[in-house]
Image (cartoon, rainbow over all chains, first blue to last red; front, side):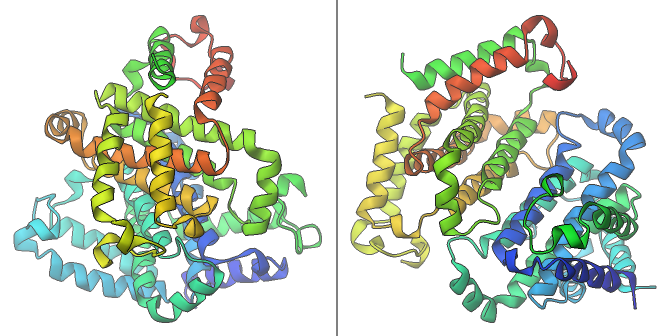
Length: 115
Length: 115
Length: 115
Length: 115
């Protein structure tokens, strides 16, 4: 089994051993997702490009932990909602290929609707 | 190679073919992460428990796509920051085991600091 | 002078006495706005309707303080961007009157585009 | 009556005429607050300092409208929760005076706990 699935199973097992499913619903789980994303961004707030580069040298583990917290909720949410998120991402990437053909999108920050 | 890593490589390749790295910095990437999490939650806003259950029956693919969008930015961010996010999550889960021992945390919604 | 303007002036004076303008830019200020909104919502996370009602009885001041934190950044942002936010809101309300006529919108949770 | 209170009354009247109170609860209202803050920040994403300055020259009204949207939910939330948010902000500012004395905080980006 690959590591992603393995981690998902660990997270679900962790929750179920603690009988926490009763507190979980999609709205609050997604809220956690959003709030954890907020904790990632706090690392970069009030810093300019150079300060961020400097900061990253010594805070990679902290940021990794925050990113892991975001991933945690994706894994739990997608499990509860019976969504194969890797499959969904693969589909999405194919869509993006169509929306942003290399020849049009290269070097451009425009949204696909403006290309 | 497992699917998670494979998707990460696809995303990076997609970006690099379009020469978009120049627009990317950790602050704005994380902002995307947060804003995409917001798009997930919009599906659940203004709905109560029953309405969410009903909604999920017909909108699983839409929500899957939004979750995929969040995962997209995790993959790109962790690549740019040279963070192994699966490894970071594995570490985090071990930490959580210590913070929330089953015998204390079972059936309780309390934070570990209050257990 | 009305209280809203007075508070705005106090906030600007507070910042300028501390020479903090140098750290302020619209992106990070707005990030604060968003993160503070996140702190408001943490009060309601993992709680159902009844639990929220119960919680509000004893936490009104805490929530008031968080809402004040959100307002703080609106006041500072609108000052820095030379935006009269009360005027902008007044205009917006007029727009909404047109988008959501009483006879059509009454009792309906639909978006104006679907009315 | 001052404009802030006047706008609050207009918003409540607008809602009540449409019988929308039934859809409103503190969790979803606060979510709107957060999502609208996200809409403000989208104006600044993917732009550096110079690009933001340039952008502001022609988009002040758009950003004003987004800030007004954030303020809208503060007004509605504080009304529903019977919170005087201007009073709460005034209190908060007094607290901040104590936390960040000018002599210590001047020119420093440190949090009060580190001063």
